[in-house]
Image 1 (cartoon, rainbow, N blue to C red):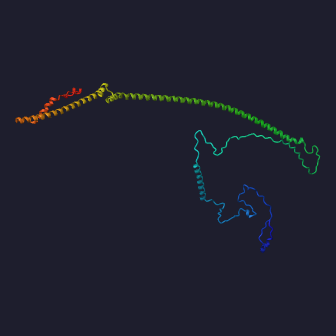
Image 2 (cartoon, helix red, strand yellow):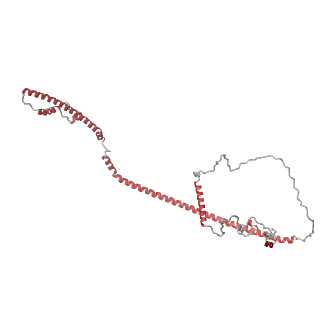
Image 3 (cartoon, helix red, strand yellow):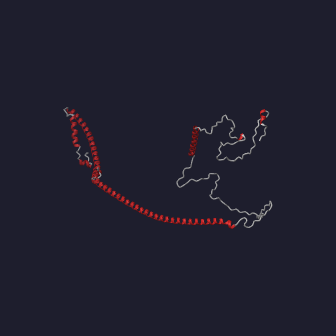
Length: 378
């Protein structure tokens, strides 16, 4: 509280401005606000330093919006986009983070200590019993009974029998209430026991009926199972019979087709093999492959020898004829010189001498002699 001068002196301008308020009790402030009290609740402040409506600091760059103004949708969209990018970036980091491969079937990953000093981990904490001997303590004496000090003066009064309370009269309504409540509770318990007994009886009847229905259901299920198994067995047998009939029909058709196809196959195969020379006479094949090549080789050698002999004979005959021609020409010249008469021409002598000598010197060779290797050389 501030003591000021009377307000009428302020008009004269002789003193400073002062303010005074009437004294009042300080309100008890609560630690927490009430649930129904909002931020806009009107409250009287005695000091403007604690008034929330007073704006402090520079107000030039302060952008204040009224409470009823709607947020900018562009800002909301920008915030949502930034939040979405942050979530996507976090998800990408989690995906790029190297992880352990999945465990194979029958195994699982476990946590392994990677610290420098390993520590044994157990589910049960190790305990140990430790004993120590201490000195004996003396028993604490019992505390004395607390008797408060008397204050005031002792006063007594005399009350005679029947002045304050008559037990027979006062206890009657209490006994009536107790007896009534006891009887009512007994009746309720009896009715509850009867109701429980009826419920047990109904439960027994229901269980018997349910057991009978369960037995009948099991019997019907067993009967249905037997019928189903019999049906499946019959169907399986019928399918087996149809399969065997189909296999038999296919085998019969295949056998008939094979017989019809192989009827003309064997003769044609044997004919083709015979035409290609796979079937032959061993003697004929031995003659063709062994004797005939040897015979042709021997005949060729014999003919070569015969040709060589004839060539040698021709050379000898040619030399002999040439020598005789020279001697005949010399003789003819000497006769001409001696007699001076006419002499036969040289051409007739040359023609007649080879023919005569060839007929006399070269004998004929028969095929048999050529095959036997006999040559006609002189």
